[in-house]
Image (cartoon, rainbow, N blue to C red):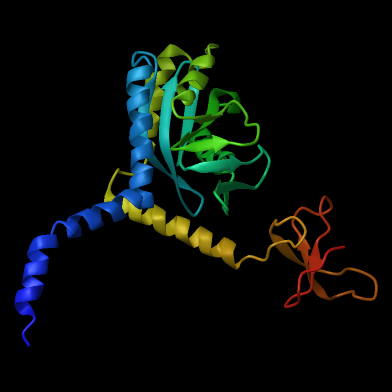
Length: 264
């Protein structure tokens, strides 16, 4: 039996489901969520901050060590250089200023992600080095976009939605000369990599290599920090290799190479 007419009829009736399916995949993709988050920050910075006093620079990729660092938004003013990291997330958010990993909880599912303040620290330091500014002249800002709720107390520079604008406006003490603002913008524009797809791919490749290295690293069984391969200097185990927590003496987690982690 020839099913071609039946298949053709079904396709002609339900063809519209194909683009809808593709659209649904795109809307749920990390790329789209990131793009929407950045768009919201861009628009709010444009319409809620006085453009005469605040200069917005988007998607800045800078050299950093053996790779690159990518900054979502930089806002330059006499009140400082604001380095803005955007997180598009939903659910409950748990975290502390000094915690290495934060937690996102959606119903019964929990997942870990890097402390965004630690993530943004590298961005701040990259700009600090490029511009030759003092630490006090740069401000780290993190803005969560999406249906998320903070379930633990957060510092003032961790914000939701348009709250980051209020944080920026709260800085009213000039720390940069008016004449220096244009020069800072020029330095950033000349020091950044071109805003091309090739630059983006190179940065993604660099980030992927970092993630793979972290996944391959040995984690401390006590606190979760990276373990460092060390050698006993004295005692009956002198000369033997062992994994020791990188936070020693604050943490004394140890393990033998190839063995099950132990605590001391």
